[in-house]
Length: 197
Length: 200
Image (cartoon, rainbow over the protein chains, first blue to last red):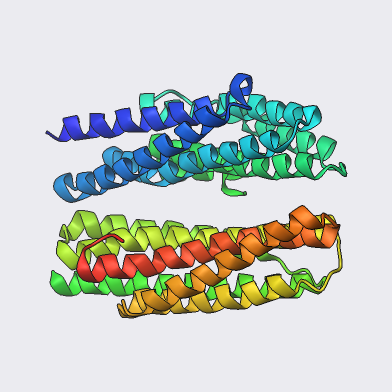
């Protein structure tokens, strides 16, 4: 029974993760209907995951790794939902009026963050390893992107960047939850870069 | 056992009270930033992120150790949500400050100041209502939320007539304040859930 519930949580989390990955797809960045659907789906999955994780805590009093898994899911469910929400806000900005430059910035942000979001979700959902040593490159790449585009006078580009930064921060939270799950609190402390947002 | 659960719940209440105070502090900083006096709401948001982690730690421990039921379970579930709402409030305050810093405009922001006063009262009222189990306050919160929604709609309508930087920035600020007001309302709704077990 316990393993069934945990598997169910893992599958729900994978589904939420895939929803977030879909929301960050540069090819469909302007598709309003699709983005709206993804947002509703993410909100629904988030509610389900909250209920299931609390059920798991009460019914089975998990310990050690199981407990860390539940904590990681409980924490990152909210971050993953926020990623989808930020993506939906970017979609609204891009649909207000055609602005190729803002679209280009949004695609750059999505392309930069997607692989790392995937690392975080796969680590919690499928036990995949996070390339911890490459984390500083993720941080510096986003900083570079921000520096490059933030000197703009175009409010749309700035708005896209601000939402992009939100996605970046939530992705870091997901990565830190994933690392906490895999290596515990001590393992997380070895990657202080994830503790700063 | 019951006593230990109560001690844990009191700890959560203490943390939520602290988070509420920090959220109000971030809203005070917003007012100062409207007069171009920028404070570090970013720091407050980070502090709230840490406090939210602490609430989650205690909440999971209580769920695992004592398998609470009925009102106690609903309180712990809701405390997790309320800690998230308070963290979001500080993030929105941070976004407002950042918007003002980036745009660098100097305007009277009359509507924003009015909306800010309402949301500050809302946050205070909502946190007190949740911690004291005062479900009557939700009616007042709903009323205030409608008032903020009205101000937001006005700011958008004004933007269609006049797209000067002051009007545009004001619309942006009130948009964030409207979200803060929603989160304060969610906290109020959680109070009803804890007391009566029904979601509104």
